[in-house]
Image 1 (cartoon, rainbow, N blue to C red):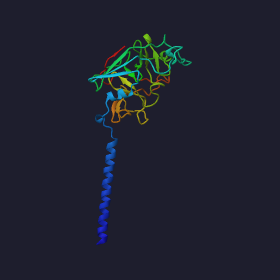
Image 2 (spheres, rainbow, N blue to C red):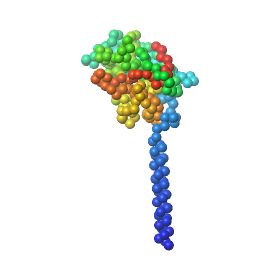
Image 3 (cartoon, rainbow, N blue to C red):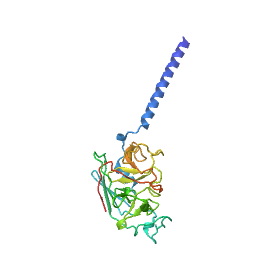
Image 4 (spheres, rainbow, N blue to C red):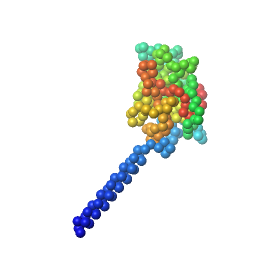
Length: 257
């Protein structure tokens, strides 16, 4: 009789332990599932937390407004000789005429971006703003032609150069925004963030859409968000990596300068 009771007791304990194990495993699986719709982190919160002090951030209703003078907070030959942030251009490089100059950037973006039914191609000029207030450009130059080898020679080690009116801007990632990592670079005019070449787990994303983005977790949006990545392709074997090519995923806001 005692042996029977002991057997039943042990059996019950074993069943309980098995059920507890299954429940624990199920709970752990749920915790690691990325659910983009469940994100409690907002675009506004991330913008306010990450843009640097040289960028003024304000909100009104569903609109976020970013203002900056568009000048870098790092060294570049485009500051000009005599400036404390001047450094010589790379030995095999060239420079565009003139030094960079302060601008009057005002970019607006929606606080709740969504996918556009019809995707609009990015155009010449500013398509976004980096965290330091510098303009982000796409992969094209004047005449709406792709950046070529000659233009590449004018890029500094930040992946940028100065254009007409002394407007300094990034075409590529580089030493001061993101360099083969998963750092947040800034936001594009459609309200979606742009990150470096890697996902937060250190791997290169393999499921990017035709516009260089996907929905996945990031350090800023742990429950997932649509975001762009800079290209992982070595552009013309130059050592530079394009920030953004193709169309906007969402509907662009304004950018005046």
